[in-house]
Every structure is written in structure tokens, then in C-alpha cells.
Amino acid sequence: MLKKLSLQHITNFEQAELNFVPGINIIIGENSTGKSHLLKMAYSIAVSWNQFGQTGWRPELIQKLHGVFGIEQLIQLRRQETVMNAEQQSVLLEVFVNHKKQETQTIQFHLDKRDKIQIAGEVPHAAILNKPLFFPAKEVLSIYPNFTALYEKYEMSFDETYYDLCKAIANPLLKQPNYQLIETIETIIGGKIILRGSHFYLQTEANEINIFMVSEGWRKLGMLAYLIANDSLKEGTTLFWDEPETNLNPRLMKQLAQVLIELTQHGIQIIIATHHLFLMKYFDFLLADTELPATFFSLKKTQNGTEIEQGKNLSDLNTITSLEEELALYDKEQQALYANL
Amino acid sequence: MPTVLLEKTKTGILQFEFSDKWQVYKYDEQSKDNFYEKKLKNKSLKAVDFIAMSDKAVLFIEVKYITANDDACRMRLNKALDNEIIEKVSQEINDSKILSHLEKSRVAVTSKRPYLAEEVVNKYKDTLLGLLAADYKKDTKLAPYYKSVFVEKKPVILILFLERTEQLNQEQYFKPLASDLKLAIKQKTDFLCQDIDVINTLTAIQPLGIKVSNISRAHPT
Image (cartoon, rainbow over all chains, first blue to last red; front, side):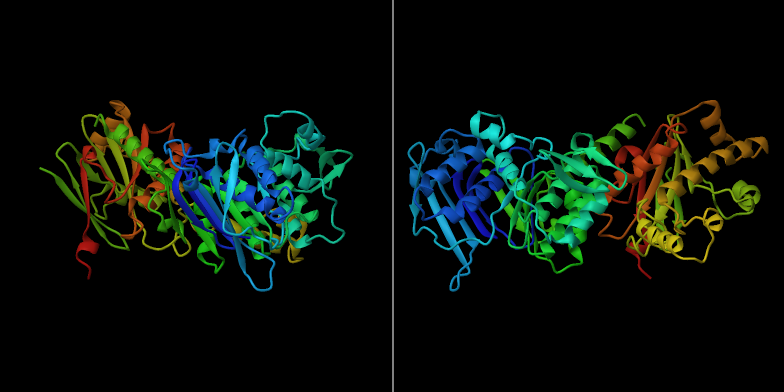
């Protein structure tokens, strides 16, 4: 699980610090504020964590950053508006580790020259409990067959999060998965996701439906259930999800929000980035009456890059762009309505 | 000279000040001379609170003053608010052996709380019917309003004036709800009126020419 991410002069951010909670972390902001960058940076480092200190870990971390961000050199991660010495473009990630004496460990590095990193301080040595998962905006059940083999051989227009997710899906199923969690999702989608040969199907009471005939919203939820069943998503995992609302009707968004909250009750840390006002408000509503750890981050574009504010509730945030646009629309509608009166 | 009318609800008193451009009628006034009160109320027809007309438009205004939260409110502000309870009860009935299959097919579980958007729509439709009745019965007070709508065919705007608590009246809470209610009302009435608006004391804009004050809030008893 992650505790803190700090960035200095990286992509949109002059200075950014996110203090995560073990439960639900919701990042909001308009397009191009850098929501996805935050998720990808945290994920790239966390997923590489257990290799730190081993031979070749540095180039592997660099390769992971290349693959996840779709870049050729780390210099592309520098904040473009700033021309600084290498030491000032830095990333820090603090995570909870499996260690008798230390609750957390930290890695901090600076970007060096065009494509190198320089570590500040010690390289962490304790392992994280479980590998994180990253869900991109599009589901992968429909692209899964042969995807990993193709990705390893050819240049493809997908970032590495798709590859990583397909590899996670390839894990075998548990004999005794967490049925409580899975059943909730299977009730929503009306069946069970199964793999026959190299293709997925939705197995309902009546028949088996080819995954391509299943709505994308249900495929996303089905993917969640499958990853619980194959032990990829379990207690101690951090799940990153970029725009989970994509292809989801608000009715399904409500069910998704409830499922994600249930996941946190099973010790899974959730970090999502969303545009959708309905989803933000629904989370806020569900979390209001609970003691579950939750936090909202709002990203706002300023002249000094993207700034971040953090609050326990949605109403603690000063900037909610989606809400501002909705209020502005109401005002415009009123002005148009009464213009000729 | 502005027209000032008070709307007394169970929750509080609102003062409506209509500018000179509006000629206003308190459609559901409890008075023995009022057409609705005399002729229609006992026929179970509903009524909006005000009808206002100018040389450019006609307003049908329904006033609601709701301070309770969603759960405690006597009507639903969102359509699906009681769905969970309904599903729960329906499931219990299906699972129980109290009713036969035939009996189950004859009953339905619904919310006792009316949905605000539907209530406004029904009041509007009944008020239009009321104007037709007033013309049929040659009621002189409602005649100009009937003429504006049905003869001159002026644009009609249906307005829900929805007053809430001081906090819930603030735009960040009110406007998203108002937008949803506008759409819900419009879905049911777009064949019957030009446009819909949902406003409160803070959001009624100047071109409308109606100023509303919350008297009960200004002078609490």
C-alpha cells in the first residue's frame, strides 16, 4: 500500500504531494491536469518495488517508466516550462513494507541527463506485500487473447499497463477464492467470467456469451471479479484505476462505487482518477456515514503548473471543475430562458 | 406598481414581488370567489400557486418549501429514492407464502411519497384543464389567462420555486438538483410548454422580474 507520492518539476507539477490513505483515494481534475501521470508514476515505481536492490533494477525501473508513460527517454517526464538542474526533478514514493522494524520505506530519485536516474538516500530493501494493479480506461478481457505475446514481439499502440494487466489475468484461478467479493460482482453482471481456450465468456444461467457481446461496462466489472478469483487482487494490493466511469452508465457507476468500497473493507487500497461528477458525489455520499479511510485530491491548473488540494470529503475541496461547469450550465440556461422576457 | 403576494406553506412564508410587467393571479387562493376553490378542488383537480402573464409570456408557478433531508421529506426529490425499500418489500412478498401467484399478480408495491417532478407536472396539467373549465364557465378573473395561453398562444414557462434550508439553497447543492428536476419535468411536459425552470430565493435572476424573500427566515417566530 502506498503512503505518499511527491513530485518536483515532473510533467505538469512544479511541486506536488499526495498523502494516500489505506482505503479510497479519489483524484479529480479537468483534462491535462496530470491525473493519469500521478497514477502512472506511483504505479511504475510500486510495481518495480520488489526488484529494488537486485541486479539490474535501475534499468528495469527506467524501462517500466518508458513503457507505462509511452516515452523513449526520461527527459520527456521533465516539466517543460522549467529548465532546471537535474537534481531538482525528483520523485519520492513512500510505501508500507513487509518489515519487522519499519512500517514504511521510501525511494527518492532525480532524473539525470537524458535517460538516467540518480537515487537520493538508500535504496529500499524491504518488499511490499503485493504487486499493485493498474486498470487503464479500457478493459482488457476482449484484447487478452495473445496480447502479451504480441506486445513482447511488436511495437504496439498500448502503454505497458495493458500488458501488465493481461499478465495478471493469465494467473491461474484459486481453488478457494473470496466468494463474498466475487458473488457481489457476479450478481451485478448476471454471471461468471470464464476462460475457455484463450477467450473469455460470460457464463450465465441460460448460456455462455462471447465477451465481445458483453457490454464494456460489464466487462470491466467482470475483469475485477476474475482478478480476485486468480489472487491478483487481494488484501494488501493497491488498485489504480484511471477513469473507471468510462463506458459506464450512472446506474452501473453506483454499483461500481459500492464494489470498490467493499474491496477496501477487504484491505485493498484503491486509487482512482475520475472526471465524473456523479461518481465523485456518489462516493462522497457512500463514505459520509462510514469510518472508512477516504480522501479526495483536486487538481487545478495554475500559472505555476498543476496544484493539488486534499480533503476528506468532496465538500472540503475548493476546486471541483465538473461541478463548476454544471453550475455554469444552469446559469446559461436561465439567461437564455429569460433573455426575451 | 409591483404585485406582492405571500405564499404560506406548512414550512414557512415566502413573499413574491412581481415587477410591473407581470399581471398575477393566485390560482389556488382559499377564497369563496376563487374559481378553483369553488369548482375544481372538490373534483380532485390539483393546482399551481400562481399564474402570471406579461405581453411576452405566461408563467405557471408552483411553490415548494422543503427543509427536510431526502429521507425525512414527505415527497421524493429524486425518483429512485425509495427503490431499495420497494425492492426489499417486493422480494419479501415474492418469497412469502402469504399470497397466491394470482394474488401477487394483482398487487404492486409503490412509494407513498409522490415524486416532486411528477407532482409539479400533474398540477400544471390540471391547471391548464382548470383554465379550459374557467373559460367554459365564463369565469371573468381567469379569462385573460385563458386567452393568453389558448388564444394568443404566448410562450408558457413552468416554474418550480423550490425553497430549501439556507445551506441547501446554496448553488453548489441547489443547482445540480435543479438541473435534474428541470430535465425530469421537461421529459413529461415538453409537448405542453415552452420551457421549465427550477429556482429559489438565491437563484431567481433579475430578467425574470420576480423577487422572492423568505419572510419566515428573516423573521423567525
